[in-house]
Length: 158
Image (cartoon, rainbow, N blue to C red; front, side, top):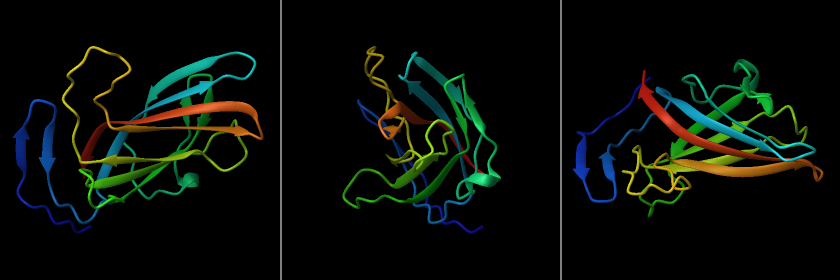
């Protein structure tokens, strides 16, 4: 694996901490996710789990299933690419896919546009998270509606 890293620059601002780096290869980036599932069919089931560090670009059948309480279970995969919007503050786009056992259609997917940092918390409102993340919902032809939240909890380069 080859990566290019420019010198780091840490800037403290009132609203956020900015970590600037120009990483050109993402295969060594491992991420722990905070994964939440909400099932609203028949009975409500909502659960959150912390994944182990996961490798990017791993196929779903090479990934161990992750149980989200009693709500769902399946492999979680992700890819990391340069940000989709070059004018955005984001440096990376982390596309997350969860291979649910509840829905047999296409698996839920969402992208986390990310600059490699956490936002510095400036609120006590629990609906506002400093963790970068995304949300998606899916259902099996209108049955078994499911909602998923994916948040980047921790990351490292190996």
